[in-house]
Every structure is written in structure tokens, then in C-alpha cells.
Image 1 (cartoon, helix red, strand yellow):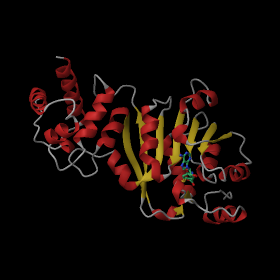
Image 2 (tube, rainbow, N blue to C red):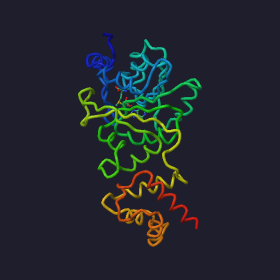
Image 3 (cartoon, helix red, strand yellow):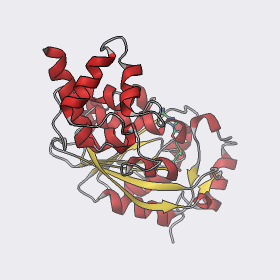
Image 4 (tube, rainbow, N blue to C red):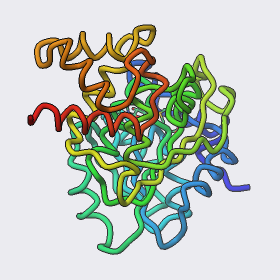
Length: 292
Ligand code: SAM
């Protein structure tokens, strides 16, 4: 078998050669299992026609597999110390473009337009730094990137939140946001043992396929997401109490009761019992009432 980067021996040799010390604050847990990487690539739908956009290449474990299986790879890495290492470990692959940048500050749409052909299928594939999983995913979906799918390794617990159903502990505003923009599926769970160093929790591979149109109609996306956030603010409170606290400067209590009644949604329910359709209906009812 080829001496891939994603093996414990090769990874240790690279770390030793460069005297590299992991930065916990950057979520550096490198993958040392080629089988897991190939699974990620297969689920992501990567092939020789497709482009791949990676976040956080580390020392290049996933990048190498992407370079082998995709047409072209573009990878964003924030840690300057990794750039010379990557130049070395990925020396044999001419189809990789490394960008030294914080993904949260990047204009990803522009990078995609500059690096891939117009009609090329592009997939985001990453073993995400766990400390910023949620902001990265929110950015990826809200920036409306011209990509076909997003397949990422994240903490198992967060993955469960993303594909959760109403009335479960994992269900929350993140679930709704991802449901709105994508179809989310947890494709497999992954043990801690495939990482170096090992994280404290198990992980999972989450696949998000971007929707052409949202599953529900909302009159104002910003307001819809505000209302969802408000409804989950204190999970033990009823929907009406959460809405009253959050919107106290905007709507008085009687008005909130009236709107809830108009919507046909019982204000004594908890936010976590509403599905995305009910949230959309409630948000649209609020806006219509505010106009009158
Ligand atoms: N892809 C490699 C692998 O699977 O072995 C490394 C994954 S490691 C979990 C996360 C990587 O993301 C690290 O290389 C870290 O330096 C990088 N990173 C952390 N924050 C970042 C950010 N804001 N923008 C870009 N890269 C970031």
C-alpha cells in the first residue's frame, strides 16, 4: 500500500520532521485512517470530474485523498506553520491550491469562481475544527455557495443536533437552519481512535445537500430565524413566554397572544415541539399582523 499521509507512522514522522506541536485552540486533530477518508470521499460524491473545497488541511491527510480522487482541490488553512509542511507533503500533487486564510473571513464564492470551471460540480469536504463547527456550517449554508454538497466530520453530538426531530433533546435552532437550506444526513459515526491526538468525544460524518428551494415559504428569512432563535431561548419555557421575553420591545403581550391564536398554534406548547412548517407559518403570521 502507498505510504499515505493518513497513517499513524507517516503522520508521526511528519510531525517529528517539522517539530510540529498541535494547537488545541485551532481544533487540530488529524486523521490517521485512510479507510475513513475514503469513506468520506465516497459519501461526498467526489470523482475525477468534480472539484473539492477543503477547510483546514492540517498536514494534508484528507487533501491527499482528495487530490487523488478529484479533479482539483482548493484548501483553506489558517495556521501559517502548516503551509511549508503542506508544500512538502503534497509535493507530488499538482492539482492542489492552498490558501492561507481564516475560512470565516474568506469570500468563498469568489474563490470557487476563480478556481473551478463554470459548470463543474464542487463539493465541500472537511474534517472541521470542532471549536467553530457551527459558525462554519452556518456560513457555508447562508453564503449560498455554488456547491452541490457539504460533507464534514464533526462531533457526534453536534451531528445529531443537525439531523434531529422535534421533541428531542438535540433538536434546536441549528436543526431548523440546516433543514431550511439543506437536506442533512448523518452518514456514519467515527470513533476517537482514528485521530491524532484523540479528541474527547466521538465524531460523525454529516452530509448536507443544498436545496434548490427551501422546504417552506417564509416572507422574511431574517425574521424567521429570529423567531426560531427566540422560541428555543429557554427550552423549559412555553412558546408564548419565550416570544414575550424576546420580543418585549417590539410587540406587547396581548398582541403576541392574539398572533398565536390567529396562527392556530397553542402558545402553551414548547418551542421544541414545532416543526419547520409551523415556525414558518408563525413567522409569516407575525409579519402579516405587524403590517396591520
Ligand atoms: N484535514 C486535516 C485532517 O483531517 O487530518 C486536519 C483537520 S483538523 C480537525 C482542523 C484543521 O483546521 C487544522 O489544520 C486547523 O489548523 C484548521 N483551522 C482551524 N481554524 C480554521 C479556520 N478558521 N480557517 C481555516 N482553517 C482552520
